[in-house]
Image 1 (cartoon, rainbow, N blue to C red):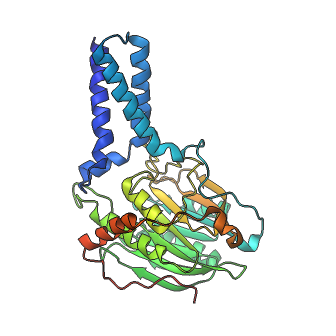
Image 2: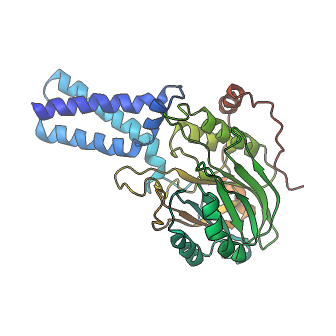
Image 3: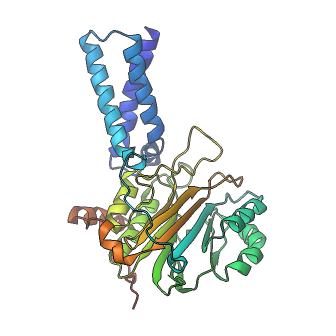
Amino acid sequence: MKLKSFLQGFGITAVVLTLLPLIAIDYWWIRIFDFPHAQLTGLTLIAIITYFIKFDIKYYKDYLFVVILIGCFLFQLSKIYAYTPFADFEAQESTITDSSNTLKIYTANVLQKNEEYHLLLNQVKEKNPDIVLLMETDQKWQDAVHNTLSASHPYFMLEPLDNTYGMLLYSRLPISDEHIRHLVDKEIPSMEAIVTLESGNQFQLFAIHPTPPMPQHNPMSSDRDTEMMTTALRVYKRKMPVIVMGDFNDVAWSETTSLFRKTSTLLDPRIGRGFYNTFNAKNVLMRWPLDHLFISEEFRVQTLNRTKDIKSDHFPMYTELTFEPEKAKEQKAEKPSQEILDRAQSQLKEQNLLNMEMPIISSD
């Protein structure tokens, strides 16, 4: 009976934790339950199997409990199914091997207090990426990596900060029209630039690292959500190819990231390929995908890898893309409905940013 009572108690808790993030409130103690969704799904399945094995299902309450738990599991699974290998690719695989239209990207949240600089530099040397984005970088990090990275990647944007939101961007490929913006908070930078591939084709690159909802400093998710929606709405109006990347401090299946993807009409390379959990590198059981890379329909995926530990609390990500605009129509995302756009714009309205002047992305 103790096991049965425990399973029933767990079942009720699972239902509550599953439904809690659906509440349209930005408090951290609600939004945080978006994160362990995959773990909760697995535990719910274990509870269902255990209940069937250990107990006879013969009473009304048993049937009701099992039906509710199975319904909860199916809902949980529907949220994360796209990030399993059973789903279809959203961003299709590369069909060319043209090196002049290939783009290699390395992104890493380095953990500001981490001093194992050589691990990152060795990994960058091994991967030989065209673009390197480092987040949570202070002046010590810049001093440690700049000479090495700038020698091989002579184009760069630097904003070292000691508040865990510093960003360093290095590129082997030419960049132009670069800007460091502070969309929501003067201490939280984002970067954007136009990158020119070896073929001469260009795309717009965005790098963001919005602040997460935290009980001590930022109990609401409003700042994070606003920065994501500001970027999404700009990308939606684009007139050239786009890549958005960074540590979003949000999971792929959350309402906010889903709204970002639908509003921007960008593609998520992980869909159909896997979770690619990047945080927490120090805890095997509690990991989820916080580091993201979204691409417009002109790009296709050649390689998508989570790399080895660099003594950070995040694993780095390494991605190889090919630029194939002639096949863009084959994977073009659905245009967002007016409801989707209204939801995205409402986030800006809450922060009084709806009428903020921001340039439309154009190749002109």
